[in-house]
Amino acid sequence: MLINSENGVIELEDFATTLYKGMSLDQLKQSDFYKEKYHTMWDVKTGYFWYYFKSIEITGYQVSFSLCFFGDQLDSIHMNTWEKADAKDWNEWTEEKEMNVFHRNNTFLTKVLEMLPTQKKKTPYPSCTFKFLWGNVWSVYDPRSASSFMGISFNEEEKTNKK
Image (cartoon, rainbow, N blue to C red):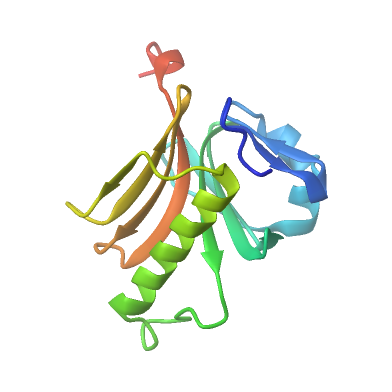
């Protein structure tokens, strides 16, 4: 199992690594997942830092992770599936190819969560959401960035005094 539907925790069993909201950057850097799959980091210059990882195989899919830290705490998790046939640059990109990624991401989430989406939308852009008590797992095709990706959004009840 990848995403625990009880609490939104991600279990990367092959790396003995657990990803969860509030995880410290030090904990991540000590993990086998970080040591083996870390690719690059982007400082957004707003207190947020994105850590990008090389893809790993999960239930027959190549899945890459992007972890967003606010300061030294894990704030949100983005994921994407990948195949060799996907567009590698703008010359290869088509909306049809990107929609295929969106549908593949949805199929991946349905498989790992062992449930159908709670909500599907076509506007303002195609999205698919799995709702839980602790937050949502979602997939979207964003035409503004011409990309498809998935993620986990946690409920914000603990952030009331951090604005």
